[in-house]
Length: 257
Image (cartoon, rainbow, N blue to C red; front, side, top):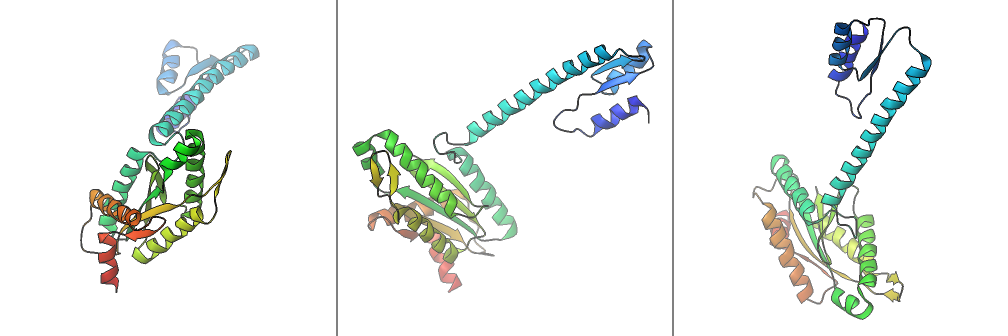
């Protein structure tokens, strides 16, 4: 193929990042140049070429690619900021709800089990009142680190709001969800958090909701959140630093028995 056809092939692939094409041609007829540019070339140089001119045109192309790279980086940063909590780096409320909706939809198609965990730091307001918000922020970041370290790579951890977290566990049935939540509870309760004011004991309460594999009943996102939230309130009412299962999880567990 000739240079013009090669340009068309490159552009037809739609590669990202953008490929800057400098067309070197022996044809200096205006129509040939126009054809090359319309085929996808960004610039052209006619033979015989001057080496200094070639270098200058290559530098001009590099400036364009550098600008593109900066724009892509800025776009990525904006997309990350739009979907993540700035303090913890977790998915923010809107993003984690969207991810839950996707998992619920996927579960409805595949029939897989699905587990949802609502977690809340116990007496977090006392930490802020006693030590200030900077220490409270440090506690939130460390709790986040432990939660992320305690789940599977494909589980989702999001900051639901304040000191509350939402954890999505695809393919996790009621017994495994309970075991996973207990593991997360121990990750925080068994070791105090080191802060600038010393060690601070931190515990979490957990509310669970899950549906078993091939369960006939269709559960929507709102039901999962409602049942997990109700279970979380039950955990707090029964002394905190504990795990409680919601109505969906209990029903699934009973059917499994």
